[in-house]
Length: 288
Image 1 (cartoon, one colour):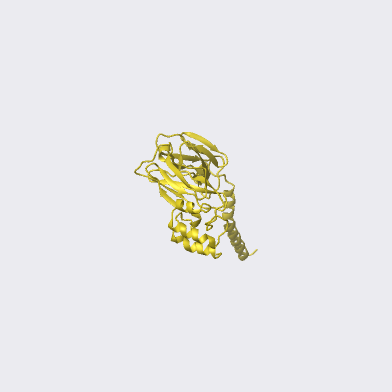
Image 2 (cartoon, helix red, strand yellow):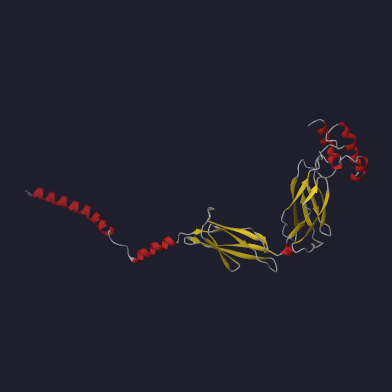
């Protein structure tokens, strides 16, 4: 073998050795087990991955009533096997929900609700107001009234005490908005309905939390809007009693037309019989 060939061979081996040495080092290094320091670092990185819990509950609740608490993640997914702490007690929420009872309180106060779940969730906290019965409203009304009938509604505090006379409550019921008098009372009128109908009464006050909605049944007495003489039809014979209703009160109308219905003249159902009902009455007569 001549000298030139030997030099070339040596050069090739040197180049090959240079190329494979890093690969060999990497392969050897890949077989090494990580150090305890590396393991701790990786675990710490994993533990830094956490998901935030979210508590869903009412903003306020009356004392001695139950309410639902729901625990989800930030995407709104229920978190099973979570736990809720409320008034120094821990409650299990196996499906991500739990029903709690608001305790009796001496005065309205804010209480913290805590929620917990296993790793990787962070805990969460939320505030709910427990309302003392003196601070919320209660509606006292009949369970049912006949259509067109006047009825009284009384608003009290949750413990039955009267309202502060300087701060009346407002009551809403089917196009009617009234403030309570010094006795906490309002007078309302049932609308004309085509069938027995359940309608809500609501009450609000500056110093008080709102009342629970009260449902009242309006009983259908077969009164038809526009049927002034009570014969079951809307026709030209209804014109005179309609005009009479525009210029007289309910008592006078019932004396003049004992078979008729005064409030059948309230075409627009605003609980006032006036000239604003004329266009609607004409439309009914013409079949529109």
